[in-house]
Length: 140
Image (cartoon, rainbow, N blue to C red; front, side, top):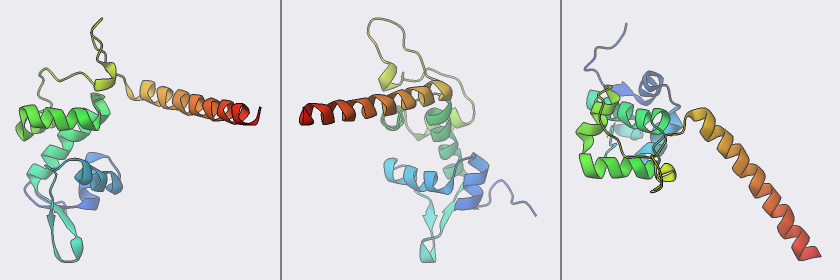
């Protein structure tokens, strides 16, 4: 039997509903002070409907809009939790550009998931090359 819309959700139910792993929800709790699920005996988390709405907004900002954790923190500080809930509900409105994409010489662009993944691989390659160069410089 499915739970009603006002029922509390366990971390596994919340993770399934949001399409993210449970450890991501726990990580977000450490980065966003406004994510505070109820905790019962034994430390079990229970997410209220408003918690799910806020998490839906955080997920949309991080995964769909390309904001960084600091960008979401800044948006929360400037516009409040209602703005996060609105984003999760699909309400349109201006969002701050991701920090990495801000450039005073032109319009900011949001990176999609594929572009971020490609950049991540490029960074790994560059880090590896730097390590090899450092090793050569020390040895030669």
